[in-house]
Image (tube, rainbow, N blue to C red):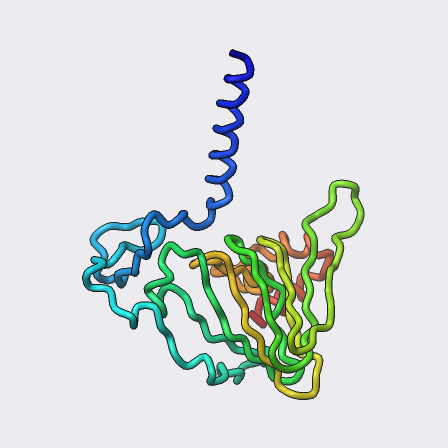
Amino acid sequence: MEAAGFLVMLAILLVSSSSFSYAYDNNPLQDFCVAVPDTSAAVFVNGKICKNPKQVTTDDFVATGFNNPASTNNSLGFGVKVADVNLIPGLNTLGLTVLRVDFEPDGVVPPHTHPRATEVIVVLEGTIYAGFVTSNPTDNTKNKLFAKILKPGDVFVFPIGLVHFQRNVGETKGMGIVAFNSQNPGVITIGNAVFGTDPHIAPEVLTKSFQLDKKVIEYLQSKF
């Protein structure tokens, strides 16, 4: 009886751990669940409502234009094209988002996090310095940086939730393809989240936190 009980408990744990592994995007229960546009949805769900399978077409699984660069005409010198569930309705429930990211020389994707997804980048053009920082250690040591200069053909992984960045350190334009294991990975850009909120975080909070003069904090808030 004890052995049987142990096996039952083991089976429950295995099923539970399998469920946890799909905590970020639901495990599909059918071939596909092509998304209905939000404006046509009658109820709200964690994801998007499925189109009637009889109305699904090949176009629901296709997007074009990834061969054309994204606009990099901004102060950071990078741009992205997003292939997500809003562009490809057939991605709904499949736990996937793909980006094309383009860099000008010295273009940078500033430190940011994705709260709901792990990210992987495949560099196709340029020389990209990429890295991520560990969460706060428990032994009062410094956060550790994992970073590397990537060349075309290199692949780099950014674990879920960790602060990371990319910068084109080459003399020519750069480009990579990025994938996330979520149809809605989310993004928190650190500078925007700290200095660019509406309304602003009280300067007294930031002067104490960053050990900076209040005028420096107010200047940084004005930049964002």
